[in-house]
Structures are given as C-alpha cells and as structure tokens.
Image 1: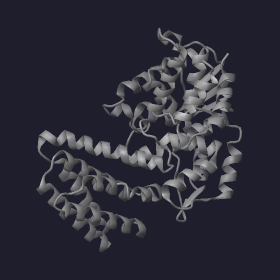
Image 2: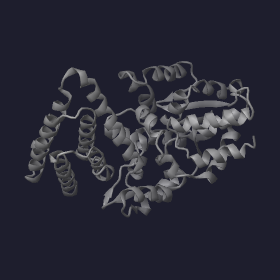
Image 3: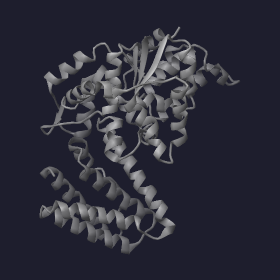
Image 4: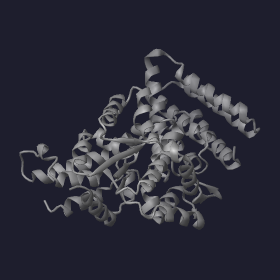
Length: 183
Length: 229
C-alpha cells in the first residue's frame, strides 16, 4: 500500500470515528468523507481506497435508515481497530478486518438485509461515478468497482458530470460525419 | 467491406432508450458492417447475463448479434496491438509521478478494431476515450480539476497515441440518433402537438443523455438549434 494512501485512509477513518462517537452523528458529513479516498482511488486505482469509500458510504446510509446507537458504537470500534492495524503497517490484518466489517454489516436482521445489500451496491455505483468524474473511463471505473457498464452508465447519465465537458463545436463536425455514412 | 465500429456505450444507450431496433433500420442505409469486438460483446452481453439487472437488455443485444445486425470481431487476433495501445494510453497521464490507468481493454479493443478495419466511424459515447482521441488537453483539464493537482502529460507516449488514432472518426450515439431523426426513421413517434419534431428530437436526445451518453445540455440545445425545427 502506498504511504499516501495509508495516511489518507487513516485520516479519513479517524474523522468518521469521531463523528460516530459524537452524540448526534452528522450523516451528511460521513457521506462527504466517503469521497475523500476517491482522489487516491483515481490515481492509484487501489482496491483499499475504493473499499474504504464504499464502507464509509454504506455506514452513513445504514445509520440514516436505521438509527441504532449500538451499530454506531460497533462501527466506531471496528474503525479504531482498522486504523490501529494500518498504523502498525499490518496490511494483512487491515484487509481481514475490513472484510469482516463488510460481513458484519450484511449479516444482519433479515428485514433490512436486502436493504443493506442494495446500499452496498448503490455505494459501489456512486463511487464508480465519482471515479468516472475524475476522468477515468466508464469501463475502467466499472471494472474497479466490480460493476457492469450498464449499471454505471444508467446512474452517471442522471448526474451533471457530462455538463462539465461541453464541446458544441465538435458536435457539428460529428454530425457531418454521421450524415455522410447513411444514404 | 466498409464498417462502423461500436464501443459498448452507444449500444447501451440505444438499448436503454428502446432504440436498439434503429441499428437494423440504419444498416439498410449503410453499405457495410456494424462491428463490435469480442471484449465489447463480453461487456454488453456475457456479463449482464450473469446478473438479474439488465439481463433482458443483454438478450436484446444478443438478438442483434444473432440476426447479424452486429458483427462480432474476435479481438484475441490483435491482442498485441490492443495491449500496446492500452499501454500507451495508460502511460500518457501522470499524477503524483504515477501513470493513471484511464482506459479499459474493451474500449481500446474497439479503437484498434476501428483502426484495423479503417472504419468509416467509431461510435463511442463515453467521455474519456473520446477526449483522448479528439481533445486530450480537455481530458487533462478534467483530471486536474477533480484531483486538484497538476497532471503531467508524457509527450512521447501521447504523440505516439495521437499518430496511431489520427484517422479515427469518432461519433456518439446521439449523432446517429439525430441522423436517424433527419432520415424520418423516428417519425412514427411524432406526437400530435405543436412543434412535434422539436419535441421528438429533444426527447430522443435527453433520453440518451439520461441513460449515460456523455452529452451536455448545451450540446443538446445546439443540435436542436442546428436542425432548425
């Protein structure tokens, strides 16, 4: 793991833990923190930055839907342990713990189990869209998040990402090419 | 034999807008093949067939392949060229001294197919691949804007890439849809209201945008204005 990636993950997770430990966790702030590792995900395209982004986002959505103080405490405790592993360069321990946290999140009471599976899927799509926004191609972003291009395109189309790179002059040129193809 | 090569995105855009049938209609007006590579076939069909979502959409595209509306080109035959171009593209932009892997094998396989077939056009909806071909400085700006840091361009790699793709003519699915509209192929959808042609064209273009085609609101307005409806 690159040092800068490790540092950013620890930094971000410590902020999330601080929010989870507070009286009334600010869910919007947790959601925002889930984007902090996306820069590194776009540059280094490492699975750790991606999985942390998904994890934080999923935690925010679960708390939003189902305020559960015990869940928040459990997550805060897991995050502390994850940070400890990373600080000690115990990368194997870190990866195992992250995967355990995901398992714990999904192994929950059946009435919200499907919701949580959907939350994780949506988290993958949202983060995939962020990576695409950073300039990575849609196929590459889909591959990084384990998604199909169908899913990612369906979501990305409803964002304003395409509005930020307008090229009206070339549109006319492309139309001329297209017209010339068909009799 | 003439050909138009399609990347994954335009086929997805057409399918999710219930316009996949347009390919068969437009092929009647084109003296050549509509081509996808085997890697694109995998992304379009094989992959979603293993999931629940977009399974029926994948079957619709499969039907196009079975009916020979789309011809599949086995990109294993030119894998070395794809890997070479992929290496060039993914070593062109650097952030924090690291090369950014910005494109995927399937996208480059389509591009190489278009090069080898000397395709009349390369239909690609997604922004990154298209900008790499058409306007790399713009792609650099996009990356810099979102990473909040300088991105370096490897001039040597980039010149190599530019040289290889110089004859590629990229268009998007919305340009094909607009031409289909001009040809009257979509007249059956004209609504019984004022400005019916404008309403139809806007609905087609917005449908494409909302289903993932990288087109801006300004570009949609420009196309509608150019049509003088």
